[in-house]
Image (tube, rainbow, N blue to C red; front, side, top):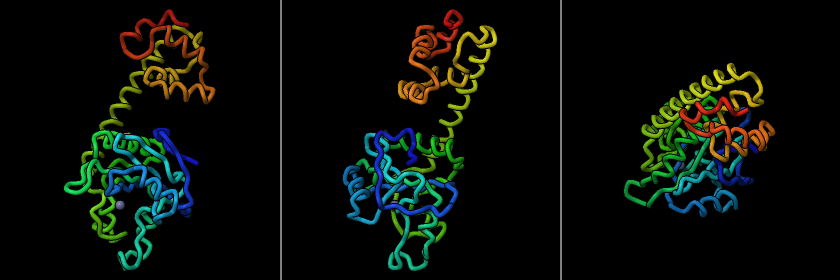
Length: 255
Ligand SMILES: [Zn+2]
C-alpha cells in the first residue's frame, strides 16, 4: 500500500479498481460539498455510496489516505444518465490520476476551502510531483468540473467549489523552487564541511541536509530506515548544526 508520507492516517477500502497499467500523470481535485470529513471517510470505506478517493483533506489540513495509490479511486466515473457521452472517459481519467476530496470550510455560497486545507493541498501537489513527475501545471492538476468542460468526460458539476487551482498550483511551484534552492545550499555547505573535515563524520551530505532541514518526523524516518542512528542525530544536534546558517558555522568541532 503506497500513501504519501504526508498522510496522518491511512486506510484501505474495497471501493477501488485496477489502474490497468495507466501511468500516473494527473491530479484530480474534488470538494466534498460538505464540511464533514469523517462522514466522507465512512462513505468511502463502508460502501454506502460507490465513491472513493486516494486522499481526504480535512478542514484542519490533515491528509488521510483512503485508496492506496496503486489503485484507481472512484471519483470521476459517470453513469449513462449523468453523461451519456462519457463512455468510460471519466474512469480513464481516474486511472491516470491521484485524486482527493477536500472538505469545505462551510457549505453553500462560494464553497470556501480553509487556509489549512489549501496549505495541505499545496504540499500534496509538491509531493506527488516529486514522486511521480506529475507536471505542476493546469493541464495536469485539474478540478473535477474541468473533466467535463474541457474533455467531455465525467459529468457537469460545480466540484471542486471555491478551490482556486490557479493559485494553489502556482503556490506549489513556488514551494518546489524554494525547496530546491534550500536543498542546493545545504548540499553545498555539507560538501564543503566534509571536504575540510574528512570523513570522520559518517553521515553523507544528503542525510546531513535532511537533518538540517527536517522536523522530528523526517529524523524519525531516517532512523526507522536505518540510515542514521539516534547517536548520529545526538551528535549532529550537539554539534549545533540543527537549523540555521549561523549554527552551521559552529559545526567543525562536532565529529
Ligand atoms: Zn468531484
